[in-house]
Amino acid sequence: NGENNKKNNEIVVESPLYSTTYCDITNDTIVLEDESGRIELSFDPSESTDTGISNDDSTKNQKDVVQKWKLDLVTGAIVGVKGRIHLGSNVFLVEDVYYPMLGPHREVELEEGEEQDEEEACVLLMSGLDCGGYKSNKRNSSTFLKRELVIDYITGHLSAPSSSSNGRFISRVIVAGGGCAKPIQPEHNAANSWSTTATTTVTGSSSDASKKPQDQQSKDNLLQQQMKEMTLPIRELDLFLSEICSNGIPVDYIPGLYDPTNANWPQRPIHECLVPNANMFTTMLYRSPNPYEACVGNKVLLGSDGLNILDLRCYLGQIKEDVDVDAMDTTGDDTVKNGKKVGEVEAVPTIKALQTSLEYNHLVPTGPCNVPTFPFEVHDPFVIEYAPHVYFCGNCESFETKLIDIHVNDGGDEDTGASTKVQQVRLICIPSFVRTGQAVLLNLKSLECNVIEFDDVVLDVDDIDGVHDEKKME
Image (cartoon, rainbow, N blue to C red):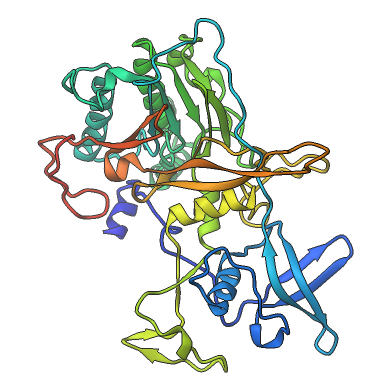
């Protein structure tokens, strides 16, 4: 199937980061580095004289905590480490690891005229529209129809007025990257055949000279066709955004991997000339950067197109279930149990990687090593200083959500000193629309999430993952 797709110049949605992890609990070496130098960290509890390893969850033993540290630390994470230096081996024996603390929720006051019924106000979160992504008529029409169903839902034409997830309560739409599919590359065979024809015409007899204008016209037609195919994704995205804006619904568009913008993070908003139809609604379309932060109602929403979280997931790990970790052979020999290598590490769920990024207080901890980022000498724009109300990432394999409690620094005063309090943050993994046909409806007051699924009833081809989905829109 892959070879056929390549021959037909069809774009298939690839997911190399969905299940890959480079974490190796037995062979990885973790090094602490600062301005003074670097030193290797040892997480072996048997080498430490302090057996009172700090742990918030009293049900876990020391080995569980040590394994968590080794699996949760990635390059670029800023942490504090407590322990002592082993003079014989010149390594740092870790007794405890401290993560930075976020600031409290920022107080957002609604401006005059912005008051709204918070009981019903909702935000629709989407990603992975993949506009212009398929050359096959059946699949392209199916994806296009699903996007049209989204517009009908937003305008309140597809759900009953009594439904709690009615589209008429949507106050804003956020598209978290993936709006444009990977552009189709020009067909080299056609270009080479024209080049050969042109050469023959020039070097041929005088009677062939009259064919040169025809060859030039063929070349121009070929170039125009290639330009149409390469600009199809952004043109389809422009029409989709303009249809939503024309119905009076504000849209925040976050650029993604294949969008026409800079590759290095933070990515700039797409230029207004690329979306001329949607840009006519100047008060409805918000061309946002990536990562994204905005105050919607009285809530702070923070997120990205998901590339930073998917890359972070590659360097996090968890021990596979039903594997005897205590029987792991530390000598390097492979031990197999139930068909699996003992102590084998698998990729963490995307929601876990999203939560880890929040614990690091950093949006792109793996940049610039893996995610390309601009160098900043004084201020790092990716540092999360205050706890958001909602933290999301787009283009995920499936929908995941979690409401977590975090300890934030309340500031305190000069007499009492700094104090902490617990606040809640809603984590959301927005599924790729082209893969699942799903969007997420977020209630701004309760921070509850509902999944809205769209599907056409006449789809007669397999979906992206090869499994036919017969579900109708819920």
